[in-house]
Image (cartoon, rainbow, N blue to C red):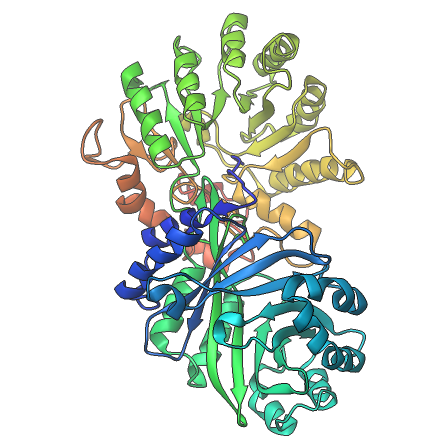
Length: 610
């Protein structure tokens, strides 16, 4: 799959720009959004691992506290800290005084002595460390071994100069309540257990506890979270909060929308949530908060589509004609403007100036991928390699003789190019009915050629060849051949050549997915057909289409009504492809209905499961 642009951190101003592109008026009104300019002015150039929003789910007021996460050096145990800026701090336009929360160690080990002797004096100051040490020693000595000291917070901006906030992770609510008794917490643990009974099963808990030199605070917060990152779990948690009157339906709906927001891919930026926090005082849960995040990494793959195409498949020559060079360069520039990660070039075998198009992609910091489906000359391949493509896809047809010659030439001349490492080389084998017996020989031929990935697809390069049924028996034999090749390399750190099913061949991905576990690992964004979700196409005559194998929308002409961004957002056929209901009638009764997204260009009779 086309690479995404990954970064460890982004500038705070980049996160804020993303927030302005995706406003959440149910959570942040215009006054709040405007006040965030003060955060950008004072913290905009900080390198942050994430952006956080603290949302009061039951409050009619629409504002958030804002959170960043940065590295900390020179303090034992602490690798990073959360900079939490209360709304009152950034709303008045003056200098901002933040609260600071630091994560400790690796999250799995106790470091009590190191924390007291080295970390706390450096992080909170010698005076605070000395004053609070006796109470902290009492707390640590009362903690069971399997309780993890996760975080420490310095809350000076809230007028809590004398205290610290500790965040302690517990495997069960019962252990947490019993430990509060050991801490001489002034609340009623029986009432606490009753209040949190709806969350006792299926959740983990972290206790946010304020500590002073002679007591712990009665007000506590319980962070509720669970293992895994499936949005369905967040949906159920929000439903429960609404049912208990702790979340407004409008804010719960906004949090759902935030979690499902299409991510960016260039650079990666995905929205998620960290946990829900339930604040408790006086025998009742009086407030629920959601801690939302935007992060430059993928937290999960259960999103409907990307905010902008991950890749544009550009047809330089084809049945619809030949793309003029000026038009090709203009479309490359449009891709760069829309932050597309890569352009894959099709029909370039007879396009003499393909090097100019590739150079334009490189100059725009976009990856170039080249698909080769026909015989090409040695000189053409040399020109292509000189432009340093990230990936090359060589199609094998029939007995693979033509593709073999291309692979041999690539192997022979690759070492003489400026790109010493060479491109990531793929082979694409479009399966045609009756040719299943060729696969083993083609795999054996490709591997010594430096091929890194062998892709099995049902989709030939020309649509006319897609007519033809393959049987369930042939399909099963095909799956077994691919599986055996995978198992051969299962003990290698890096297989010589991975054998995979194209997302377009979703049925095979589902079949392979159920071989690995009792369930099926073929889930999420890359379950199958990516058209309109991660990729789109541009035909040689300048018309957009979801895929080069699907017809373009009527009326979308070269230089006409649609730009790349508008087509991605508004085209009817794109919207149809994003629907989650079964694609064909027979899919509803299939055991793979949740693990397969079949190609919309295939007749139902081609599915081996029918």
